[in-house]
Length: 415
Image (cartoon, rainbow, N blue to C red; front, side):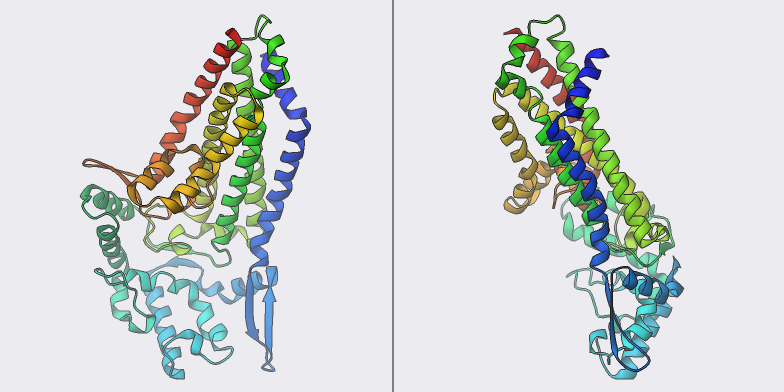
């Protein structure tokens, strides 16, 4: 325990650690604020003058205008919203909302806009996937909206996972377990989750930079020549170094992400977190969560990804005699999921992005986007939803790489 405390103190008091984690804390507040700056609304005052609202003023305006739409998203309320939309466009003789006269959308459509989310997607053509215009949707068919969405899941999975009936059955079963009716509380948008993902990736990079020198830094400086001669300079020291690096990385990630979530929710309003994930992403998203649950689940998944990546970095550090080598290898592994996602198509990319430890917090490959997608890993007649496979891979990789790092360090010092 004393050895662990000394290693922890050495890591925490290092100048690089202090600088990077102070920067991470600042970024937690900054990235939570940035989604607010992207909010804007155009309105027309009583004199007919155009007024532009940005930031918190825009958020408050839209929440006030859409207050009537908040609550349970029942088929009846969706049908009424579609009827309002169609009546408005018919009255002005247009077929799309952007052709309406100035200020009409804000007065008549904006108040019911949250209830229109997903209507076109739900009524998409089952063969082509093409969504109709809202003017083409028959309001009478919306009374059976839940069944329409369930059928949409089946048709979508037939296109996404052809030849894999197990994946299709699993997806349909998952969606049937989503609690209905859905809920919506206007004010928040997907940018909030995107920036949480960005913060997680930046913290991952910071933790990897710090962890890359845990073993190789001692090799390079010659300190390891002294440490290996001490009574506890083998397995115990290696285990203490690994445990300290993992605890420090996990604590820093948990602290920064918590600060981000609390700040973002305070800015947009905590009631927004009660919206169903389907009302912010695809209407047929398979997971049964609201936005608040998604934030904390993604934080937990990101933590596992960071710990798995740090464990792998420690393994590289135990094998490499120079810090620059272990750091370069670790950084390559951090950006590899993004490169693989863009360069390698199909099932190979899905498998690699599932197994690589940094994928969980990757810019384009994170578990956030896997949760809102329809990717499955297919092995014979078995189909596993990608997010569950990503979590399972991280749970296995954390102890595996950690034990290997200690083992390799012990062998190195013994030699």
